[in-house]
Length: 244
Image 1 (cartoon, one colour):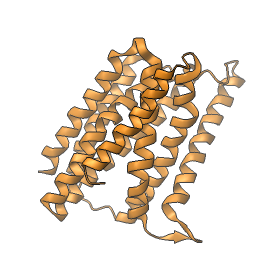
Image 2: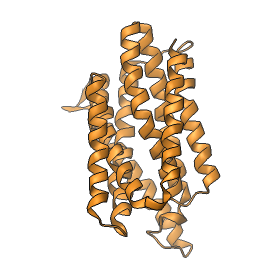
Image 3: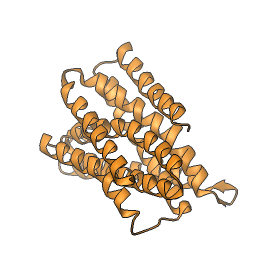
Image 4: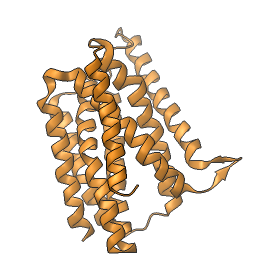
């Protein structure tokens, strides 16, 4: 049952990536929306779940928040190291299109997150059918944003379209494989919560330091800002409808 439900996430991920491809003539709006979706997913979905699942504190600070900060700093470090390497080879330090590794790394992280979404579906169905359907609804709804963001991030850093499509397909398949894996393995909830915290920090860095500045660089329009707000509001609606 969990694998069949995860097929819905597969379809929604591809739909999100297809939408991102079709609006290339409004790139600044795409990036603005992607930034809002990423912000909403981190603040309203991933981080609250990480805090709930991770549980324990380390010197008075929730472990999920420590990993959240660590993920942010790790993403910043990777981006700076890649930018420095490009500059050393005569590239422009802030030219995203000369560091395709950043886009591929970010997309790969999203594929990993999507696989964990599938694991969450499978684990929820092990608890009960009602719990499984509730978790599946949340996953399927926000996997549209995952597909949209995966294609956008990969393309933003200068990767060829075929690479972006390949990462999109991998992201679409990941929830199905993740749900299938729960037949054979069980991931402890604290470990899952820690992963979500780490991933949230990295995703927030990409949204705040890369995606949104790029969206407003050539088109500092009010419409771009409205797309960002709409993206975050959409995730809020998804969380509300799915019951958090």
